Length: 211
Image (cartoon, one colour):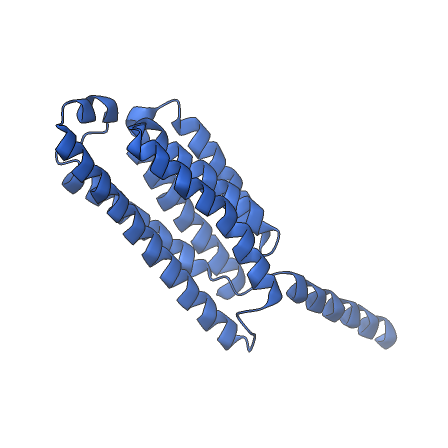
């Protein structure tokens, strides 16, 4: 009986070692919560401060503005998105590095490099595409494009970390595709996709793997 128990324990140990060598397991659930909070804050800034009157009817709103005002708003929206993205990335890195150190693991490994590459390729491609949409005044497609490309990035990176990241990516893609039919509600879809889904994902991950 003792031999059987020892064999089972050995199998579990081997399985854990193999999983750790092929998956990045230092991703912190709290980073999802912070990312969601930053996204909601960014949406509120865009809604009340950049778009002044809180308009979600982008086509009508931008047609009523002068060219100079439209250009100014473009750059303000870009700055808002860049700040949100930068804060989310910095917090995710800090929390993940702290989690790796706490577990006595290296943060920068061949697996984390592959995860980063698979995450960045769709993100950079999507970023370029969004900038093109922005300067061609296709404002109604910007939020759907962000959600879809971000979802694709998570799906691509999901095979190198927890499976939950893959499913979050699928939900982001579905949210992005759905938002194309409701362009007047783009900011609400932004809040749901980048905010609420991230917070739910982060809390679930923290409760399952870190608490």
